[in-house]
Image 1 (cartoon, rainbow, N blue to C red):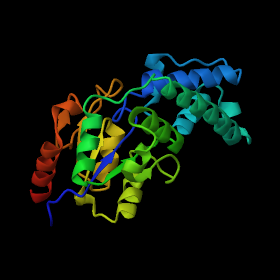
Image 2 (cartoon, rainbow, N blue to C red):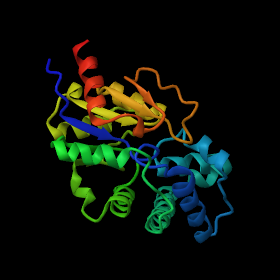
Image 3 (cartoon, rainbow, N blue to C red):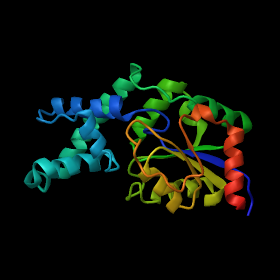
Image 4 (cartoon, rainbow, N blue to C red):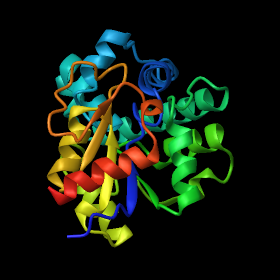
Length: 241
């Protein structure tokens, strides 16, 4: 088994940026207002809802709680898709005005990997439009092209903690699981990477301070606390153990 690291695979929400509290949550609430819905998610409520991965899935879970009959109606999937599309537009607008920034150390690691020719990829439950907006407004118009593969949204039927998105990304990178290193912030993300056989490091986000992140190679307070050489060493030790 080779110990060469051949790709960094990044989660997005909470890992690349603290998107949830001041990005997605605010965008959901604005979408609810647009749609005339009497819903508002405060910070604590949204933290609880984050146990459900995927925005549309989160909407359905909430709707089932507050109005189960309506959530079971035949047109429920179409209504959820409409509300989620509204939310995505609001999220893109928030990112465009600088409401969401990359977390410390993220840009340095991305640029170091590019400088060394180490492929980058993304494995996330968020929608492709959200990923594109975040990358474009924080790193520049060409930043989407920094990534050899972006696995996002509904490209797989099961979202984290299922391993599907990592397997999808690995297939397109033509890599074995141990040849990549995942960077995650949450228990579902860590579980997804590990279930796919991908070694993983973690950096907790505002909403994942109490998550069970057992099984990670290392946990950092900030990605500014590690450089690419350090990630390579962690990966090499893991795959040679």
